[in-house]
Image (tube, rainbow, N blue to C red; front, top):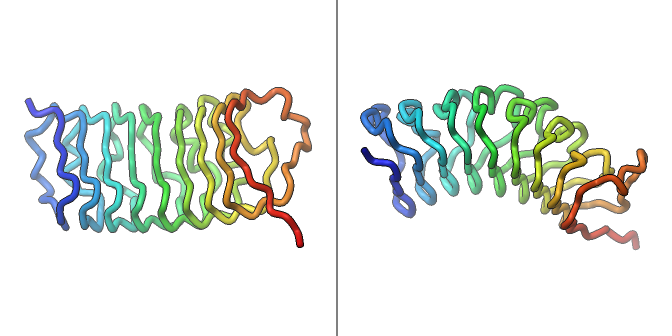
Amino acid sequence: MLMVLSLDFNSIQAIHSEALKNCTNLQELNLNVNKLIEVPKTIKYLQQLRSLDISNNRISVISNASYQGLRVLYSLRLAGNSIGNLSKGVFEDLPSIRILNLANNNVQAIEQGTFDEVPELHALRLDSNLISDINSLFINLHDLLMLNISANRISWFDYALIPIGLQWLDVHDNQIETLGNYYELETVLKLRTFRCVIQQNN
């Protein structure tokens, strides 16, 4: 009947592939600040899982991660790992995901269409990575309310790059010199909070 399991701030390096096989009612699993090098395979048994936090570990690859197929997973936190470039398919078959945190990783490039697999996202964090191009990444995220892409290497930004319904946006600490408004969308956006620092040419 276990519903919440928190194993944060330990030195866990691995979890047996069947360790949680009988925890079928688990809804929240926290493995923050450990030494895991991969997403534990035993997570595939947790079909009722709603929240998964594997932040601040040593994970570098999430393709074919064992959380794929968790139909009710709502929140996935993978911040503070060593995850590299993201390709289409990396978040497939997660229909209920609304919160995705990939902050503070090593992401340099994201294949177009990667986030189309989780179209009902409400909050997305990609801050503190190495991303330089966000063109077409978020265009189909019509339910997105919060987006943090601060502390990256983005040099070009236009309001057309974000969904019209977005309410909270942070793009500070990039290399942006001007805010583009080619399609004159600024007046129809729903933005309530916008944090941006423009780089000045010397």
